[in-house]
Image (cartoon, rainbow, N blue to C red; front, side, top):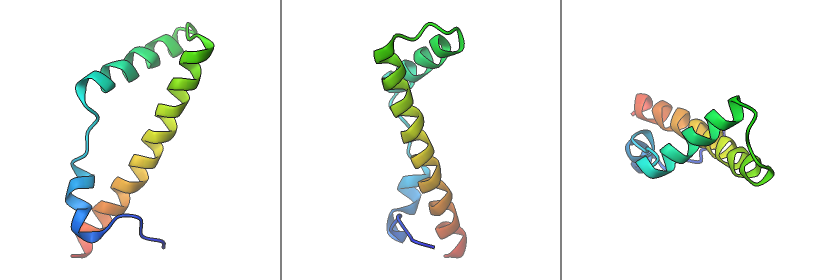
Amino acid sequence: MLEIVLPEKSDAVIGFRADPELQARIEELAQKSTEGELTEDERGEYAGYVRANKFVAILKRQARQISRDR
C-alpha cells in the first residue's frame, strides 16, 4: 500500500478537524442539497468539499493504521 501519511505526522492527521466556520458552511450546503436548493455554484463548491472529505477520510484511516502499527 502506498503511504501518503508520514508516520511522525499520523497523530496530527488523526486530530485534524475543519475550522468551525468551514464546518458551518459545509453543513449549510448539505442542508440546501438535501432540500434541492443548491445553486450551480454551490453544487460545485459542495462537490469539492465532499471530495476533500473523502480524501481526508483516507488519510485518517491510513494514519490510524500507522498509529496501531507503532
